[in-house]
Image (cartoon, rainbow, N blue to C red):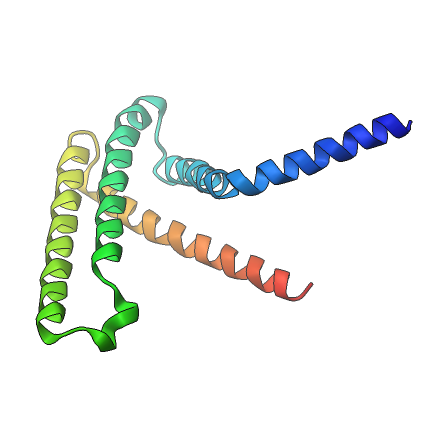
Length: 150
């Protein structure tokens, strides 16, 4: 019996250590899974439409994430008081460049989606994205509040 308890304890410790390492990746995967389910349901996608939609949408999301990473690297807002006016000017130019590129990739997304979605469905997608993000934020805040109240 002691050996079983010892083995179970070891497994528990090993699994919890591994869970901490992969928790961010697991968290992202859970969000992605929730997003797929939510979008598929809200847009009433059948298997054929989903097969066309997700590769296009995922490519868009990757491009958008790359832009935001670039923006985060280029915009060091923690040191704002220590930058020159010329540096601030360059930061503004980069910000506008990123915004323009984001507009272009969204324009490309809409163009690609129009091959099998109506304009009305694309507008609905925009609303669904916003609703999903708001839902995530609400759940995050509720979880953080529950953790503080423990």
